[in-house]
Length: 125
Image (tube, rainbow, N blue to C red; front, side, top):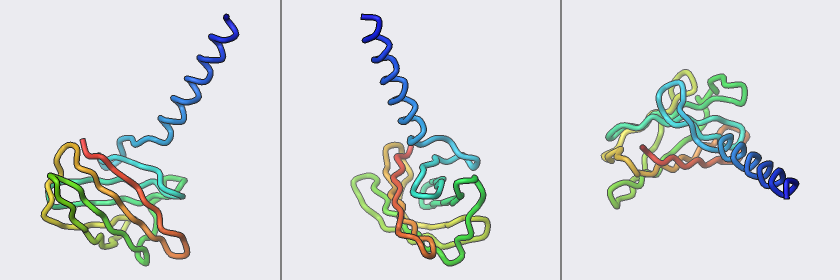
């Protein structure tokens, strides 16, 4: 009985740790952070505006000058495509007519030079 309890507790702890590591969390710029491939992506969303911060596995800003990124915003029953423009410091910016309301979903597609495209999904709070 005790052995079964210990095994169950170990499985629950391992599952919870994996879920926390893979889940999103608050970033340095106040947005949500999601791990995607070899990058940490932080999304800051406001009505009509998206800012995407791209950091490497060592938490350093990536050079995104030659990278491409786009977003699909699903909000208020509407879908809007937003092109993200690279800026200095590992940042992309994009504008649209969407509302960054609680429950909206933003799907980011990021293509870094010499890498396969990566996708990340953000659910807005």
